[in-house]
Image (tube, rainbow, N blue to C red; front, top):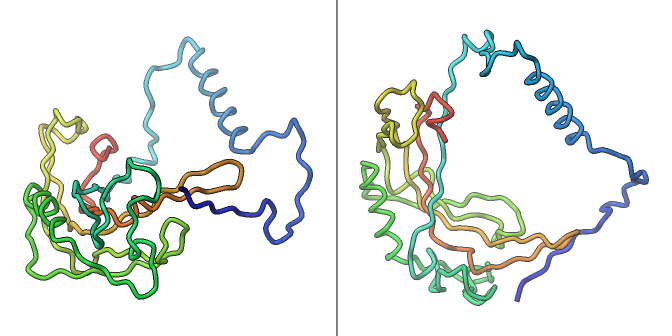
Length: 229
């Protein structure tokens, strides 16, 4: 069973102009114009292959940090006894806490710590003796409680590092290897799975809500797009 959420076609009784069959969205128009310019440029015989570097960019250096979410392979969800399975029939592995039923309390599943600690060890992090969970408040249909239980201020692991090598696909400018600092790794719960059924219906599968995740936050020590990818 999937829960359906529908939104009105014209919320707030907003006045809309009738569409015409020959109307072209602005985004598509801009993409088509850029494509035409690119094709016209490639057709020139004296066109140099490769992209020329904009001289204005010489004064700037790309500085990137990334956040990576990884789902932990556990039998149970992070804060309830419901099975952690997303492949079964929709809404068949849902505890009352998963859908924010009033009065329910979280039950931390200690088994989720094992794969999380393995990741922290592999990334050379310092595992903290004390860590706490926080509430990150935001409203969206796939978050029934209106907030996500996560860690930020006191995560379970900090101050790690990861060394990437040329065979990992790093940029040639980084040489044979590049070491990127890991600010922290935090545990958090996943959201429900939202499926759009055109034109205005969203189907929600709460099997995934509450699955244990880790979020790996690097320091801004990446300077090339290829390495960041």
